[in-house]
Length: 126
Image 1: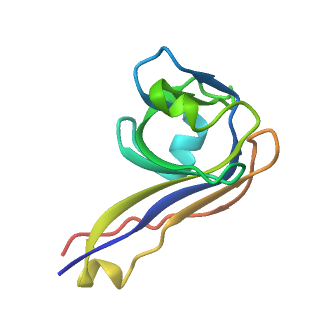
Image 2 (image 1 turned 60 degrees about the vertical axis):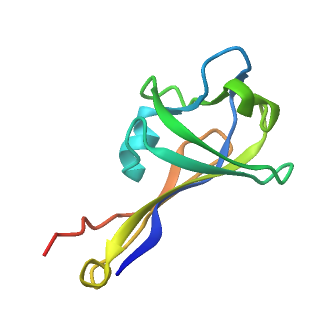
C-alpha cells in the first residue's frame, strides 16, 4: 500500500509579488526550495492563511537569496503581495518507507528568511 504523506512544507512564507499575465506557477527562492527538498516543477499545494484560498500549482526556481515568493498566472487572483502562505508538497510512501519517514518543515520570518528547519531524512528504498 502507498500512503500520500507530507513531504515538505514552507510555513508562513510571504508573497513578494504576483504576476497575473505569466504562465502559471509559483516562483520560490532557490534557498527555500533546497532547504525543503521541493524540486522545480514539482506539484505544490498552497494554503493562503490571509484569505483562506487553497490551490494547486507547481514550483519554479527564483533567484537564490532573493526571498521571492511569486504567485503567477490565474493563481495571482488567489494570493497577492503580503499574503501569508503555507506551501506543501506531498509524496507517496510504502509502509516500509514510512518506518523512516520524516517530512521537511521549513519555518521563515516575515522576510522569508529561514529561522528553523526540521531536517528531512531521505527515505531509502527497500
